[in-house]
Length: 116
Image (cartoon, rainbow, N blue to C red; front, side, top):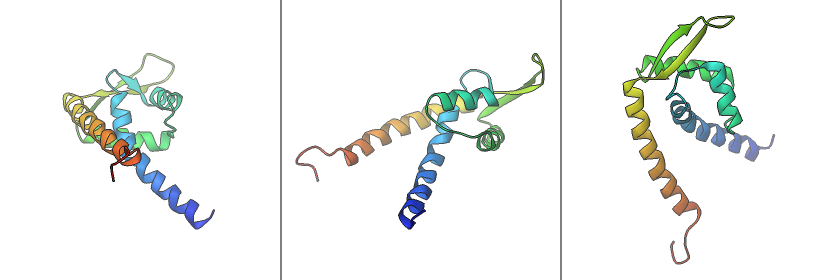
């Protein structure tokens, strides 16, 4: 790997790290267990490994943004996660911030003629 490729890889990791939280929160308006969440995110183009997701879910729960419970309906117990009231509020605020950032970034990346 060249120095440039290594730098780009690190920058890409930083960019992804910032988007994973809002992506996960956005998918937990309804109760979901970890593996189904990974599958959903991957199917929608956000490649995420289980070893990245589970620590994040625990951290978000410790920050009171998620609620969880164990479900024992299937062949094995699964931990199900859902946004808490604080999680819904945080998602609303983060979504607003995200949308504002998208507008700003689009202006930077696609300047209109005459803009500097």
